[in-house]
Image (tube, rainbow, N blue to C red; front, side, top):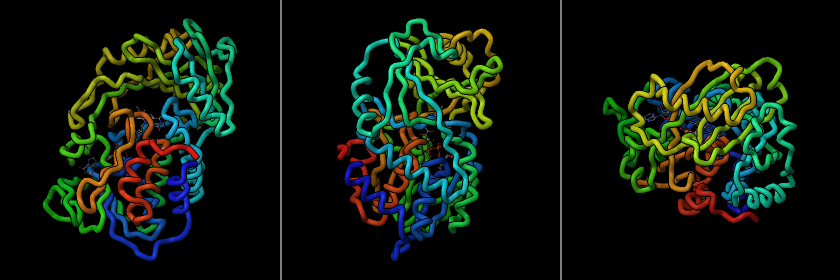
Length: 386
Ligand SMILES: Cc1cc2nc3c(=O)[nH]c(=O)nc-3n(C[C@H](O)[C@H](O)[C@H](O)COP(=O)(O)OP(=O)(O)OC[C@H]3O[C@@H](n4cnc5c(N)ncnc54)[C@H](O)[C@@H]3O)c2cc1C
Protein backbone atom coordinates (compact mmCIF):
# COMPACT_ATOMS: atom_id res chain seq x y z
CA UNK A 1 0.00 0.00 0.00
CA UNK A 2 1.37 3.46 -0.82
CA UNK A 3 1.87 5.88 2.06
CA UNK A 4 -1.04 8.09 1.09
CA UNK A 5 -3.47 5.15 1.07
CA UNK A 6 -2.11 4.27 4.54
CA UNK A 7 -2.89 7.79 5.77
CA UNK A 8 -6.37 7.62 4.29
CA UNK A 9 -6.98 4.21 5.88
CA UNK A 10 -6.48 5.86 9.29
CA UNK A 11 -9.82 7.55 8.64
CA UNK A 12 -11.48 4.20 9.15
CA UNK A 13 -11.16 4.98 12.85
CA UNK A 14 -12.20 7.78 15.20
CA UNK A 15 -14.37 10.86 14.79
CA UNK A 16 -13.35 14.39 13.99
CA UNK A 17 -13.38 17.08 16.66
CA UNK A 18 -14.02 19.75 13.97
CA UNK A 19 -17.33 18.87 12.30
CA UNK A 20 -18.17 20.71 9.07
CA UNK A 21 -21.36 21.27 7.07
CA UNK A 22 -20.94 19.34 3.85
CA UNK A 23 -23.14 19.23 0.77
CA UNK A 24 -22.74 16.24 -1.54
CA UNK A 25 -24.25 16.66 -5.01
CA UNK A 26 -25.38 13.33 -6.49
CA UNK A 27 -26.57 10.12 -4.86
CA UNK A 28 -24.77 7.59 -7.04
CA UNK A 29 -22.27 5.24 -5.44
CA UNK A 30 -19.63 7.96 -5.14
CA UNK A 31 -21.96 10.51 -3.57
CA UNK A 32 -23.49 8.00 -1.14
CA UNK A 33 -20.16 6.50 -0.05
CA UNK A 34 -18.72 10.01 0.31
CA UNK A 35 -21.64 10.88 2.58
CA UNK A 36 -20.89 7.70 4.53
CA UNK A 37 -17.15 8.45 4.85
CA UNK A 38 -17.89 11.96 6.16
CA UNK A 39 -20.89 11.22 8.37
CA UNK A 40 -19.12 8.40 10.21
CA UNK A 41 -16.47 11.00 11.11
CA UNK A 42 -19.15 13.23 12.61
CA UNK A 43 -19.65 15.79 9.83
CA UNK A 44 -23.13 17.17 9.06
CA UNK A 45 -23.84 15.90 5.55
CA UNK A 46 -26.67 16.72 3.14
CA UNK A 47 -26.97 14.76 -0.11
CA UNK A 48 -28.70 16.60 -2.96
CA UNK A 49 -29.96 14.39 -5.77
CA UNK A 50 -31.86 15.57 -8.83
CA UNK A 51 -33.84 12.35 -9.21
CA UNK A 52 -34.97 9.48 -7.04
CA UNK A 53 -32.54 8.09 -4.45
CA UNK A 54 -31.14 5.85 -5.77
CA UNK A 55 -31.71 7.14 -9.30
CA UNK A 56 -32.42 4.37 -11.83
CA UNK A 57 -30.90 6.59 -14.54
CA UNK A 58 -27.55 6.99 -12.77
CA UNK A 59 -24.41 5.13 -13.82
CA UNK A 60 -24.43 3.30 -10.50
CA UNK A 61 -27.87 1.75 -11.00
CA UNK A 62 -27.46 -1.86 -12.05
CA UNK A 63 -27.55 -5.37 -10.64
CA UNK A 64 -23.86 -6.22 -10.47
CA UNK A 65 -20.44 -4.66 -10.79
CA UNK A 66 -17.06 -6.34 -11.18
CA UNK A 67 -14.38 -5.94 -8.52
CA UNK A 68 -10.92 -7.41 -8.89
CA UNK A 69 -7.33 -6.74 -7.89
CA UNK A 70 -6.06 -7.01 -11.46
CA UNK A 71 -5.84 -3.60 -13.09
CA UNK A 72 -3.86 -4.19 -16.27
CA UNK A 73 -1.16 -1.62 -16.87
CA UNK A 74 -2.70 0.82 -14.33
CA UNK A 75 -0.53 -0.53 -11.56
CA UNK A 76 -1.21 2.44 -9.27
CA UNK A 77 -4.86 1.39 -9.07
CA UNK A 78 -3.88 -2.27 -8.67
CA UNK A 79 -1.82 -1.21 -5.64
CA UNK A 80 -4.91 0.44 -4.12
CA UNK A 81 -7.14 -2.60 -4.44
CA UNK A 82 -6.42 -4.24 -1.06
CA UNK A 83 -7.41 -0.93 0.58
CA UNK A 84 -10.46 -0.78 -1.69
CA UNK A 85 -11.56 -4.23 -0.50
CA UNK A 86 -10.97 -3.15 3.11
CA UNK A 87 -13.13 -0.07 2.55
CA UNK A 88 -15.95 -2.27 1.22
CA UNK A 89 -15.62 -4.66 4.17
CA UNK A 90 -15.82 -1.71 6.58
CA UNK A 91 -18.96 -0.45 4.84
CA UNK A 92 -20.55 -3.90 4.87
CA UNK A 93 -19.82 -4.25 8.60
CA UNK A 94 -21.71 -1.00 9.15
CA UNK A 95 -24.68 -1.78 6.86
CA UNK A 96 -24.80 -5.32 8.26
CA UNK A 97 -24.93 -6.80 4.75
CA UNK A 98 -21.99 -8.37 2.90
CA UNK A 99 -22.72 -7.64 -0.77
CA UNK A 100 -19.52 -8.98 -2.32
CA UNK A 101 -19.99 -12.32 -4.05
CA UNK A 102 -16.64 -13.97 -4.80
CA UNK A 103 -16.45 -15.09 -8.43
CA UNK A 104 -13.63 -16.36 -10.62
CA UNK A 105 -12.52 -13.97 -13.38
CA UNK A 106 -11.18 -15.30 -16.67
CA UNK A 107 -9.53 -13.11 -19.28
CA UNK A 108 -9.89 -14.73 -22.71
CA UNK A 109 -7.03 -13.22 -24.70
CA UNK A 110 -7.09 -13.10 -28.48
CA UNK A 111 -3.83 -11.19 -28.88
CA UNK A 112 -0.64 -10.63 -26.92
CA UNK A 113 -0.67 -7.40 -24.87
CA UNK A 114 1.59 -5.63 -22.31
CA UNK A 115 -1.31 -6.22 -19.95
CA UNK A 116 -0.10 -9.67 -18.94
CA UNK A 117 3.26 -8.64 -17.53
CA UNK A 118 1.69 -5.82 -15.52
CA UNK A 119 -1.03 -8.08 -14.08
CA UNK A 120 1.52 -10.79 -13.26
CA UNK A 121 3.51 -8.20 -11.27
CA UNK A 122 0.57 -6.77 -9.35
CA UNK A 123 -0.98 -10.16 -8.59
CA UNK A 124 2.38 -11.41 -7.30
CA UNK A 125 2.67 -8.30 -5.11
CA UNK A 126 -0.73 -9.09 -3.60
CA UNK A 127 0.10 -12.82 -3.25
CA UNK A 128 -2.81 -13.63 -5.57
CA UNK A 129 -2.85 -16.24 -8.32
CA UNK A 130 -2.53 -15.40 -12.01
CA UNK A 131 -2.85 -18.71 -13.77
CA UNK A 132 -3.22 -19.94 -17.31
CA UNK A 133 -6.21 -22.23 -17.68
CA UNK A 134 -7.30 -24.49 -20.52
CA UNK A 135 -10.12 -22.67 -22.40
CA UNK A 136 -11.79 -26.05 -22.90
CA UNK A 137 -12.12 -26.34 -19.09
CA UNK A 138 -14.60 -23.43 -19.11
CA UNK A 139 -17.75 -24.76 -20.79
CA UNK A 140 -19.40 -21.31 -21.18
CA UNK A 141 -16.40 -19.83 -23.01
CA UNK A 142 -16.30 -19.81 -26.80
CA UNK A 143 -12.67 -20.85 -27.40
CA UNK A 144 -12.54 -19.76 -31.07
CA UNK A 145 -9.60 -17.41 -31.55
CA UNK A 146 -8.56 -17.52 -27.88
CA UNK A 147 -4.78 -17.76 -27.69
CA UNK A 148 -4.70 -17.87 -23.89
CA UNK A 149 -7.15 -17.89 -20.98
CA UNK A 150 -5.85 -16.34 -17.74
CA UNK A 151 -7.53 -16.59 -14.36
CA UNK A 152 -6.92 -13.75 -11.91
CA UNK A 153 -7.45 -14.44 -8.22
CA UNK A 154 -9.05 -11.95 -5.83
CA UNK A 155 -12.14 -11.05 -7.84
CA UNK A 156 -15.88 -10.97 -7.36
CA UNK A 157 -19.15 -9.19 -7.98
CA UNK A 158 -20.55 -6.28 -6.01
CA UNK A 159 -24.34 -6.40 -5.78
CA UNK A 160 -24.83 -2.81 -6.87
CA UNK A 161 -28.56 -2.28 -6.38
CA UNK A 162 -28.67 -3.76 -2.85
CA UNK A 163 -25.55 -1.76 -1.90
CA UNK A 164 -27.24 1.50 -2.90
CA UNK A 165 -30.33 0.56 -0.89
CA UNK A 166 -28.21 -0.41 2.12
CA UNK A 167 -26.60 3.03 1.98
CA UNK A 168 -29.99 4.73 1.69
CA UNK A 169 -31.00 2.93 4.92
CA UNK A 170 -27.68 3.48 6.74
CA UNK A 171 -27.04 7.15 6.00
CA UNK A 172 -30.02 8.66 7.85
CA UNK A 173 -28.95 6.62 10.89
CA UNK A 174 -25.60 8.44 10.68
CA UNK A 175 -27.43 11.76 10.57
CA UNK A 176 -27.20 12.32 6.80
CA UNK A 177 -30.05 14.24 5.20
CA UNK A 178 -30.96 12.67 1.85
CA UNK A 179 -32.82 15.09 -0.41
CA UNK A 180 -34.16 13.52 -3.60
CA UNK A 181 -35.77 15.44 -6.49
CA UNK A 182 -33.46 18.34 -5.61
CA UNK A 183 -31.69 19.58 -8.71
CA UNK A 184 -28.55 21.64 -8.09
CA UNK A 185 -28.17 24.55 -10.51
CA UNK A 186 -24.72 25.81 -9.53
CA UNK A 187 -21.97 25.24 -6.99
CA UNK A 188 -20.47 28.53 -5.79
CA UNK A 189 -18.37 28.93 -2.65
CA UNK A 190 -20.59 28.74 0.45
CA UNK A 191 -22.91 25.97 -0.77
CA UNK A 192 -24.91 24.75 -3.75
CA UNK A 193 -27.71 26.80 -5.28
CA UNK A 194 -30.82 24.79 -6.16
CA UNK A 195 -32.97 25.08 -9.26
CA UNK A 196 -35.50 27.20 -7.31
CA UNK A 197 -32.78 29.71 -6.38
CA UNK A 198 -32.43 28.69 -2.73
CA UNK A 199 -29.00 27.96 -1.32
CA UNK A 200 -27.91 25.03 0.85
CA UNK A 201 -25.30 26.56 3.15
CA UNK A 202 -22.19 24.41 3.33
CA UNK A 203 -18.55 24.78 4.32
CA UNK A 204 -17.61 22.26 1.65
CA UNK A 205 -19.40 21.08 -1.50
CA UNK A 206 -18.45 17.77 -3.10
CA UNK A 207 -19.82 17.34 -6.60
CA UNK A 208 -20.30 13.64 -7.34
CA UNK A 209 -22.84 14.21 -10.09
CA UNK A 210 -21.61 11.54 -12.51
CA UNK A 211 -22.16 12.65 -16.10
CA UNK A 212 -24.27 15.51 -14.70
CA UNK A 213 -21.00 17.32 -13.98
CA UNK A 214 -20.78 18.20 -17.67
CA UNK A 215 -23.74 20.54 -17.21
CA UNK A 216 -23.17 21.55 -13.60
CA UNK A 217 -19.46 22.40 -13.87
CA UNK A 218 -18.91 22.74 -17.63
CA UNK A 219 -15.64 24.70 -17.41
CA UNK A 220 -14.06 22.24 -15.00
CA UNK A 221 -15.36 19.28 -17.00
CA UNK A 222 -13.73 20.72 -20.10
CA UNK A 223 -10.49 21.49 -18.25
CA UNK A 224 -10.19 17.90 -17.01
CA UNK A 225 -11.26 16.37 -20.33
CA UNK A 226 -14.47 14.75 -19.06
CA UNK A 227 -17.14 13.45 -21.44
CA UNK A 228 -20.07 11.02 -21.31
CA UNK A 229 -19.89 7.87 -23.40
CA UNK A 230 -22.80 5.62 -24.24
CA UNK A 231 -22.46 2.01 -23.07
CA UNK A 232 -24.75 -0.87 -23.90
CA UNK A 233 -25.63 -3.81 -21.68
CA UNK A 234 -27.89 -6.80 -22.26
CA UNK A 235 -29.46 -9.19 -19.76
CA UNK A 236 -29.75 -12.77 -20.96
CA UNK A 237 -31.49 -15.97 -20.02
CA UNK A 238 -28.99 -18.81 -20.48
CA UNK A 239 -29.87 -22.48 -20.97
CA UNK A 240 -30.38 -24.05 -17.52
CA UNK A 241 -27.55 -25.47 -15.45
CA UNK A 242 -24.62 -23.79 -17.23
CA UNK A 243 -23.75 -20.77 -15.13
CA UNK A 244 -24.07 -21.82 -11.47
CA UNK A 245 -20.30 -22.24 -11.08
CA UNK A 246 -19.22 -20.32 -14.19
CA UNK A 247 -16.76 -17.42 -13.94
CA UNK A 248 -16.90 -13.81 -15.02
CA UNK A 249 -15.49 -13.51 -18.53
CA UNK A 250 -13.48 -10.59 -19.90
CA UNK A 251 -13.16 -10.95 -23.65
CA UNK A 252 -11.54 -8.24 -25.74
CA UNK A 253 -12.34 -8.69 -29.43
CA UNK A 254 -9.69 -6.87 -31.48
CA UNK A 255 -11.26 -5.12 -34.47
CA UNK A 256 -14.87 -5.71 -33.36
CA UNK A 257 -17.19 -2.67 -33.14
CA UNK A 258 -17.85 -3.33 -29.45
CA UNK A 259 -14.19 -3.74 -28.55
CA UNK A 260 -15.31 -6.96 -26.86
CA UNK A 261 -17.60 -7.99 -24.02
CA UNK A 262 -17.46 -8.54 -20.31
CA UNK A 263 -19.81 -11.14 -18.88
CA UNK A 264 -21.21 -11.20 -15.35
CA UNK A 265 -22.68 -14.56 -14.34
CA UNK A 266 -26.05 -14.73 -12.60
CA UNK A 267 -25.43 -14.68 -8.84
CA UNK A 268 -27.53 -13.89 -5.76
CA UNK A 269 -30.57 -12.86 -7.80
CA UNK A 270 -28.75 -10.99 -10.59
CA UNK A 271 -29.26 -11.84 -14.25
CA UNK A 272 -26.56 -12.93 -16.67
CA UNK A 273 -25.26 -9.67 -18.14
CA UNK A 274 -23.01 -8.74 -21.03
CA UNK A 275 -21.66 -5.27 -21.72
CA UNK A 276 -19.46 -3.63 -24.32
CA UNK A 277 -16.01 -2.04 -24.20
CA UNK A 278 -16.67 0.58 -26.90
CA UNK A 279 -16.27 4.05 -25.42
CA UNK A 280 -16.17 5.94 -28.72
CA UNK A 281 -19.73 7.33 -28.71
CA UNK A 282 -19.87 10.66 -26.88
CA UNK A 283 -23.37 11.76 -25.89
CA UNK A 284 -25.20 14.57 -24.13
CA UNK A 285 -25.97 13.10 -20.70
CA UNK A 286 -29.34 14.87 -20.63
CA UNK A 287 -30.52 13.37 -23.95
CA UNK A 288 -32.99 10.46 -23.79
CA UNK A 289 -31.32 7.06 -23.97
CA UNK A 290 -34.39 4.97 -24.78
CA UNK A 291 -35.40 3.12 -26.82
CA UNK A 292 -32.08 1.29 -27.13
CA UNK A 293 -30.22 1.85 -30.39
CA UNK A 294 -30.85 -1.47 -32.07
CA UNK A 295 -27.56 -1.43 -33.98
CA UNK A 296 -25.60 -1.21 -30.73
CA UNK A 297 -27.60 -4.04 -29.19
CA UNK A 298 -27.11 -6.19 -32.31
CA UNK A 299 -23.34 -5.58 -32.20
CA UNK A 300 -23.28 -6.48 -28.50
CA UNK A 301 -25.17 -9.71 -29.16
CA UNK A 302 -22.80 -10.56 -32.00
CA UNK A 303 -19.86 -9.99 -29.63
CA UNK A 304 -21.65 -12.15 -27.06
CA UNK A 305 -21.73 -14.98 -29.60
CA UNK A 306 -17.96 -14.67 -30.07
CA UNK A 307 -17.38 -14.80 -26.31
CA UNK A 308 -19.92 -17.35 -25.10
CA UNK A 309 -20.23 -20.92 -26.37
CA UNK A 310 -23.59 -22.01 -27.78
CA UNK A 311 -24.91 -18.45 -27.74
CA UNK A 312 -27.81 -19.30 -30.07
CA UNK A 313 -29.56 -20.93 -27.12
CA UNK A 314 -29.48 -17.71 -25.04
CA UNK A 315 -32.53 -15.44 -24.89
CA UNK A 316 -32.26 -11.65 -24.77
CA UNK A 317 -34.41 -10.46 -21.83
CA UNK A 318 -33.65 -6.75 -21.95
CA UNK A 319 -31.07 -4.25 -23.18
CA UNK A 320 -30.31 -0.75 -21.98
CA UNK A 321 -27.93 2.11 -22.52
CA UNK A 322 -26.06 3.76 -19.67
CA UNK A 323 -23.27 6.27 -19.32
CA UNK A 324 -19.62 6.19 -18.44
CA UNK A 325 -18.10 9.52 -17.41
CA UNK A 326 -14.83 9.27 -19.25
CA UNK A 327 -11.65 11.08 -18.26
CA UNK A 328 -8.28 10.98 -20.00
CA UNK A 329 -6.61 7.59 -19.47
CA UNK A 330 -9.66 6.36 -17.51
CA UNK A 331 -8.48 8.01 -14.31
CA UNK A 332 -10.54 9.34 -11.41
CA UNK A 333 -10.68 13.12 -11.19
CA UNK A 334 -10.92 14.45 -7.63
CA UNK A 335 -10.03 18.13 -7.95
CA UNK A 336 -10.81 21.33 -6.15
CA UNK A 337 -12.48 23.64 -8.68
CA UNK A 338 -13.30 26.64 -6.46
CA UNK A 339 -12.74 27.51 -2.79
CA UNK A 340 -14.60 24.83 -0.83
CA UNK A 341 -15.84 23.04 -3.98
CA UNK A 342 -14.39 19.72 -5.17
CA UNK A 343 -15.34 17.80 -8.28
CA UNK A 344 -15.37 14.02 -7.81
CA UNK A 345 -15.65 12.04 -11.02
CA UNK A 346 -15.66 8.25 -10.78
CA UNK A 347 -14.23 7.43 -14.09
CA UNK A 348 -15.48 5.12 -16.80
CA UNK A 349 -15.87 1.40 -16.18
CA UNK A 350 -14.14 1.19 -12.83
CA UNK A 351 -15.82 3.77 -10.67
CA UNK A 352 -17.89 1.45 -8.55
CA UNK A 353 -15.19 -0.81 -7.12
CA UNK A 354 -13.08 2.10 -5.90
CA UNK A 355 -15.89 4.37 -4.69
CA UNK A 356 -15.66 3.77 -0.90
CA UNK A 357 -11.88 4.19 -0.96
CA UNK A 358 -12.13 7.35 -3.06
CA UNK A 359 -14.77 8.56 -0.60
CA UNK A 360 -12.33 8.09 2.28
CA UNK A 361 -9.76 10.02 0.24
CA UNK A 362 -12.22 12.87 -0.17
CA UNK A 363 -12.90 12.83 3.57
CA UNK A 364 -9.15 12.97 4.22
CA UNK A 365 -8.84 16.02 1.98
CA UNK A 366 -11.88 17.74 3.53
CA UNK A 367 -10.26 17.37 6.95
CA UNK A 368 -6.87 18.57 5.69
CA UNK A 369 -5.04 15.26 6.23
CA UNK A 370 -3.98 15.36 2.59
CA UNK A 371 -3.63 18.33 0.26
CA UNK A 372 -5.73 18.86 -2.84
CA UNK A 373 -2.69 18.09 -5.01
CA UNK A 374 -2.00 14.86 -3.14
CA UNK A 375 -5.63 13.82 -3.46
CA UNK A 376 -5.68 14.48 -7.22
CA UNK A 377 -2.43 12.58 -7.76
CA UNK A 378 -3.52 9.63 -5.63
CA UNK A 379 -7.02 9.45 -7.15
CA UNK A 380 -5.44 9.46 -10.59
CA UNK A 381 -3.79 6.16 -9.70
CA UNK A 382 -0.31 7.67 -9.90
CA UNK A 383 0.94 6.90 -6.40
CA UNK A 384 3.74 4.33 -6.51
CA UNK A 385 3.17 1.09 -4.63
CA UNK A 386 5.27 0.75 -1.50
C1 LIG B 1 -22.65 -0.37 -17.95
C2 LIG B 1 -21.67 -0.04 -16.86
C3 LIG B 1 -20.89 -1.03 -16.33
C4 LIG B 1 -19.97 -0.73 -15.33
N1 LIG B 1 -19.24 -1.74 -14.77
C5 LIG B 1 -18.42 -1.48 -13.73
C6 LIG B 1 -17.74 -2.54 -13.07
O1 LIG B 1 -17.91 -3.70 -13.43
N2 LIG B 1 -16.93 -2.22 -12.02
C7 LIG B 1 -16.76 -0.94 -11.60
O2 LIG B 1 -16.02 -0.72 -10.65
N3 LIG B 1 -17.40 0.08 -12.20
C8 LIG B 1 -18.22 -0.16 -13.25
N4 LIG B 1 -18.89 0.86 -13.87
C9 LIG B 1 -18.60 2.25 -13.48
C10 LIG B 1 -19.37 2.69 -12.27
O3 LIG B 1 -20.64 2.11 -12.22
C11 LIG B 1 -19.45 4.22 -12.29
O4 LIG B 1 -18.15 4.76 -12.43
C12 LIG B 1 -20.06 4.75 -11.00
O5 LIG B 1 -21.27 4.09 -10.73
C13 LIG B 1 -20.28 6.24 -11.12
O6 LIG B 1 -20.85 6.66 -9.90
P1 LIG B 1 -21.12 8.18 -9.61
O7 LIG B 1 -21.71 8.23 -8.24
O8 LIG B 1 -19.91 8.99 -9.90
O9 LIG B 1 -22.18 8.65 -10.73
P2 LIG B 1 -23.72 8.29 -10.89
O10 LIG B 1 -24.02 6.93 -10.43
O11 LIG B 1 -24.11 8.63 -12.29
O12 LIG B 1 -24.45 9.28 -9.87
C14 LIG B 1 -24.52 10.66 -10.10
C15 LIG B 1 -25.83 11.18 -9.55
O13 LIG B 1 -25.80 12.60 -9.60
C16 LIG B 1 -27.08 13.07 -9.91
N5 LIG B 1 -26.98 14.42 -10.46
C17 LIG B 1 -26.40 14.77 -11.64
N6 LIG B 1 -26.48 16.10 -11.81
C18 LIG B 1 -27.14 16.58 -10.72
C19 LIG B 1 -27.53 17.89 -10.33
N7 LIG B 1 -27.26 18.97 -11.08
N8 LIG B 1 -28.20 18.03 -9.15
C20 LIG B 1 -28.45 16.96 -8.36
N9 LIG B 1 -28.11 15.70 -8.70
C21 LIG B 1 -27.45 15.51 -9.87
C22 LIG B 1 -27.60 12.05 -10.93
O14 LIG B 1 -29.02 12.07 -10.99
C23 LIG B 1 -27.03 10.74 -10.38
O15 LIG B 1 -27.96 10.07 -9.56
C24 LIG B 1 -19.82 0.60 -14.87
C25 LIG B 1 -20.63 1.60 -15.40
C26 LIG B 1 -21.55 1.30 -16.38
C27 LIG B 1 -22.41 2.40 -16.93
